[in-house]
Image 1 (cartoon, rainbow over the protein chains, first blue to last red):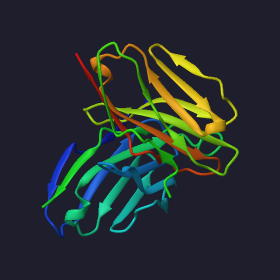
Image 2: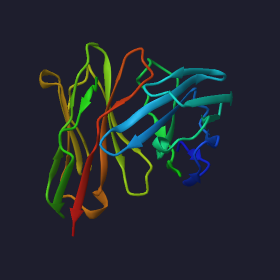
Image 3: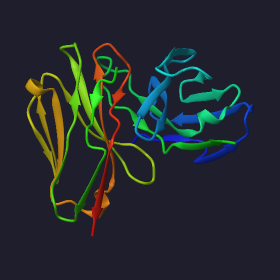
Length: 116
Length: 114
């Protein structure tokens, strides 16, 4: 089974802090994703990466950056946390085989981040 | 613009009732993929099914079944004889060919009461 592990289930930080959310997958997947989930809005894509050191902006990248130095690890960075970034953050990975969009994404347990 | 619409925000049923979750999608591509995910209270999204646009055959997996109709751009999900463990948020999602991105609906919260 695919295992996507997020470093924290719950995290509380203060406004202005730099925040790192870590995600590791163990299936040698090429693609990795970061989403945020808010009530009534579903999941919205922040950033994704299709290869080491490669990244692409999703739908809501403002205020975030990412890092992918190794294939198995994808980090989300909040450069200067703000209260409107309080949310559930979900990491996912998928295989790069076959046609783009074909492979299901596999998700971690999520990190519930509160910015005070 | 949102590409996936789940009009039902919440559904509450009594155990053993059937429940159908609606999903309507929008795309200009002829090749696309549809997914359903389940998110139990623990938080992790669990992949349930993938369908490609060329396969309209309905699918059944245990108590779960899916009805894909291109004519109405719908991909509905039915839970037969619901159980308390089916209580979760269910998401429908769409990806288009040559695109990494999944577009999710807003989700439908299903509560099954004993």
